Image (cartoon, rainbow, N blue to C red; front, side, top):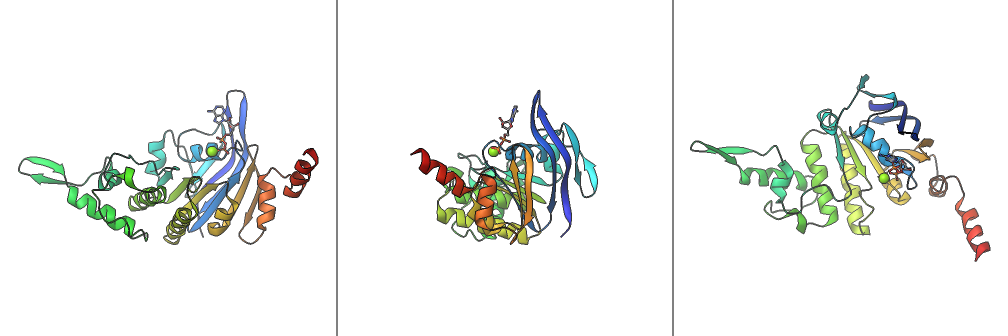
Length: 259
Ligand SMILES: Nc1ncnc2c1ncn2[C@@H]1O[C@H](COP(=O)(O)OP(=O)(O)O)[C@@H](O)[C@H]1O
Ligand SMILES: [Mg+2]
């Protein structure tokens, strides 16, 4: 698969605080890259660089073989980088159809007036979500606030794909979901990958990562501590890596000794 986006020797500091150290990562089309790591490891900071919220202090980002700079989220979005946050990032008081289009609503003319084409918006939004296998969403007038967490994620992902995203970034999409909802989201992640998107999936949950991941990178204190592919490490090895290299069994022994 071809590399869409790379981080090459990227460092990020906030004032005197060095948060990311020499990050090298390749993100490929049709692949799910799982970004793993404990709280504070730097996962969200990596994502904020890719999505134009922050800029690298040094090093570079390369897209389609050319160095790129995203001065703001708009520029990253214009390059086809879509970020979906834990709660889908959509507006609870908007209808499904509206929230799908915010800012890009289809319109129609009524006499001299151009008005929001509600019926068309609903039809496109519902179809896009159903294409991802979420057939329970069949009414575009329903409010986003009435959807489950998994359905909101589905809506946000379908929206990104509809508007031509090439890189889909999911920051802890399954963290607040129950097992069934999380399964739905994982299926959609897989579906997005099958459509050729590059997916960056951030999670704490090793099982979720293993269910969909092709490529894994573990961050520890702002550096890539391990970079490997599906099948190269066991669940236990990944869990140990995420715990910062301290093996789970050593941790358990320590807890038992201090009890
Ligand atoms: N804007 C900022 N200014 C200073 N420190 C920051 C800023 N953003 C993140 N950090 C620090 O960078 C480290 C990594 O944070 P973050 O990327 O949010 O980690 P993660 O998402 O893996 O939990 C943390 O120690 C955090 O306090
Ligand atoms: Mg984070």
